[in-house]
Length: 357
Ligand SMILES: [Zn+2]
Image (cartoon, protein in one colour):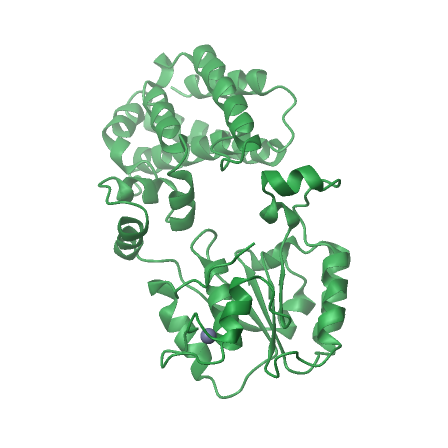
């Protein structure tokens, strides 16, 4: 399995540069970056730049020295990546792996580090450990890691990444120096998508709908996600006239088809959680417009429809109902990972929606 060395993303250059210019190094860094804005790529760039034997003047890995070649061949002896095994699932692996891929970083993965950090560095330089997303360390793994961070092995750098610091043990946070990796500005994200995916004129709409998560947009663009999102929004735009039962039937089918496509290796386009997120964002936008408290944030291109909907019920009454429903959707989102019967659930939600007006 080969592994590419990523170029430092334009919106991470300042963070990357700043770290390399530091004169005092910590042994552990916690990088906090908004979800799906390329934080993992920044970690890989840090690792490559440290393990590269002839980095360039901007500190980036050269891509052709012995260190870089070992990274590309996924066989650098002084380099470990800890992430949930679900990240590594391909069809090929799934057939040979008896246990279910995990969404968490386990204690066994942390213990495996000992075999590397207790030996001297193979190539005479620093050793690098990447841990992402760090909030997926389960409790035992987090405690084991804490012990390692409390008695840090020599010549070893730890880079942890998270988009949700609140989920990390405070004791782990306190052992790390914190760095912030920002999300890209809209224009920077659009440039990136235009050059790495394809020149498309609807990137701005897609970035708004996904709250600026540029990597998520890039990943989902290969699936029917945005087509379905558009269909969904156009149905919601009908307000009380939306056919809730029909919509539930359609999206129940789309969710089942997406799960099947995922089994054959495609990125998951939609599931129950996604549908609830769309509803939450639609309600957020509708609520802002009804309160005249700002513009649509996610469904900007549907602003005329949202404005029309906001006028279909007395503003005060609608705002109260929207507020209550937002609370309800938060609860539904928590239960979305294990839906008992998607069709019935969708019918209930869509009926509630039509009753807002
Ligand atoms: Zn190199």
